[in-house]
Amino acid sequence: AELHTVKLRRTAAGPKAAWRSVDSIIADSCWALTSLTLRDIQVGDAGFQTILRSCPGLRTLHTRGVRNLTAAGLVDLGAHCRSLSSLSLEGCVELQDMALAEVGQCDGLRFLSISNCPQLSTEGFRSVVDGCRGLRTVLCALHVLNKPRGLRQVLVDDALLGRAWEAWPQLSRFATTQQAFSLAGFANVAASLHNLSLEDCPVDDEVLRCIALRCPQLQRLVLRHTQRVRKDVEPQCLGFTSEGLRHFTGHRCLEELDLTYNWTLWEGLQSIVRSCKRLQRLYFGYRKPEPQALEELVQDNAALALHLQYHNYQP
Image (cartoon, rainbow, N blue to C red; front, side, top):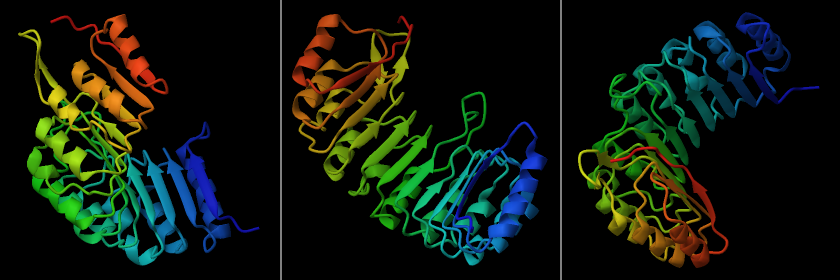
């Protein structure tokens, strides 16, 4: 029987043993293989090239934590796998911008994840924007080390984000983290978005206004930790306010809103809960609200599921 889908991850036998099993599977089913997932298996550049050359029918290729993969392993990716529509390179920490130049040759891609790849920059992302015009899902969360004391990675800036919206008018899902955006980056945000995640990306009221007006199909919005709180005053938030949240008043499609690790802005929240009839899940919490306030939210929308998470911060 021909194998069409293979999913392998590192086992107690170790990564070398896992690679021998991949090698044997490819030898037996190479032409029939359409989906391959490798998780925490260190196949290396030579091994990855073997996969690409041996499996021209691949439509889905997902890797996670393949730490010894570099651009050399992705050479001629588009030429070898012409049917490739879904590609994940998540956690491939050795990848540099030349790798994304190879990805940019895959004009049939619909799904791309390049999250947790700390050596990628705007140059590589630009290759994807210019080459992969059919993308519908783009995930580019930054590496966990990209903190003030860690890496200083910039993957998407305002100018490049604006260019991406123009290149991907059909984009349905976009997620990034730890990038600083202004109104310029969202002035032409894709109207087709259903799922937008901007975790740890400082945004202001004008950005939220633009998203609310230009994305009528938006179903899920993640704004976790997007405010910046000054601890020397009580309270002063640097970022969006209740006015920004009010722009989503009456939004017809919004089903999930995540405001975790932001100051709870009750007026804006109440406006959304009362008017967004499809809202089902609301995530928030920084300081514990009064019980009466929670009861009012539930009364405004009986179908709403509240998910609360509090900080111990005391200004």
